[in-house]
Image (cartoon, rainbow, N blue to C red; front, side, top):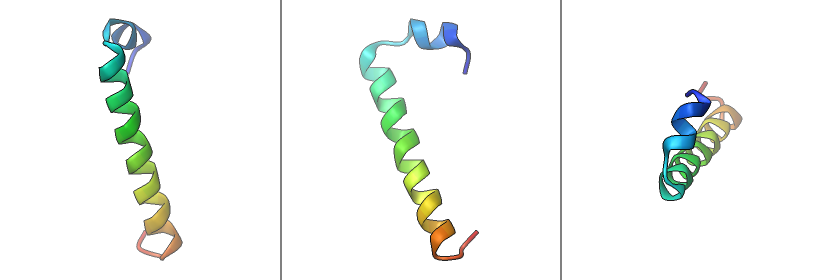
Length: 37
């Protein structure tokens, strides 16, 4: 994602994308820790 796209997003959109990224990171770490990756 380019910085211009982020500047054009509303705070709610940014928060939502960030929440999604944190959830995905958690899931990937969990999968890695139990050996699914």
